[in-house]
Length: 453
Image 1: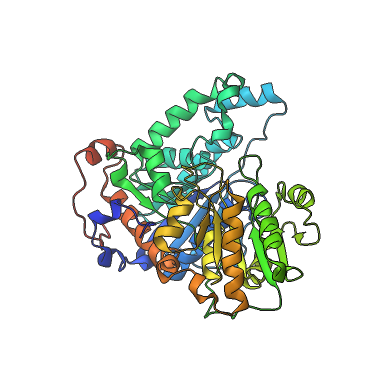
Image 2: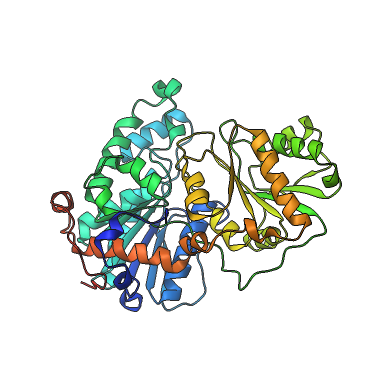
């Protein structure tokens, strides 16, 4: 299974599956908790908390001022909002603020109040509470570092993407923010070194962040990938009135663009007269990128529909109506991005076509775990060919050959994700606070997965 870490091999997998979540208390540190303003980051954290609660864990969330506080009375779930100093107006003011807070992100002014709030919160929680900080933004992990240092609680740090993000210091504009790089480098070093364990959405991202050669950091890097919004009970039969192609999520051209898929759709329709009048392409996302521009350019205005941003409860019916789901990766052969929509795609039990390089993380999930088909991110002809294959199967009502494999479905299950998380928590509990780098350098010992230390 591609979405499984090397670090978990130091444990007995079956014992990790028996981790006693009912006696586990977690302080989740996540600046973004509002699913509207925080988007995918907030949704990912909420879905993980939902899985933890279902397993019996007690969870407290420390978050930023934009959070939507869940007022449902739940004995194992609470949200605490730490105030945040307003972001300064103007580029110079923000630069001064970042230098003062020593955090090179807009969320930096939140760190100090979050740390003080978190210390008080931990005084009321169980003595063996585990701190689990989740970036992005990276400020969440900076808060986790301070809390672990102040309290001695075991700490696990999560990264959902590369940090610092590439767009912060583009190669040709590095001079715009010369003060940021030293702060990013310092905090990245501290977080990777001092966390009792690290979690990433996929092995490729973990290797990119910790270094591709075997190292002490990789020995504590676990895979806690995205979870679906909900598990669809049973399989909902596909519809055969129209061939519905669906892409959900945001697009950020020019590196993350609809060009290849729209051009491929145009080629498919030109080659397949039987498909005319039967095909519809729906794009749903708050940043729809260049979908409309390419649709107009390729003469597909009557085929492409832009639905805009949809609520979570509106997305799932859209996925279930699909004949083919499209996942568009960044135009990089070595992309380590794992799209947050993929678990919902897999659980919808519909064919998936990933526009990606086969060597990317998304490509490997498709090819090794059987999540779906792939087409080169710069090859519209590949897209046309794969659409044609699925369309032919759809006409003959034999889509089963293209559905996600059980291995891929299991990779995004709560059981699999929580087993990896149990490994990370076990390692963190056995790590001596702030002597972690020395301990891990000596090499991991096989630790019993039950390890409720």
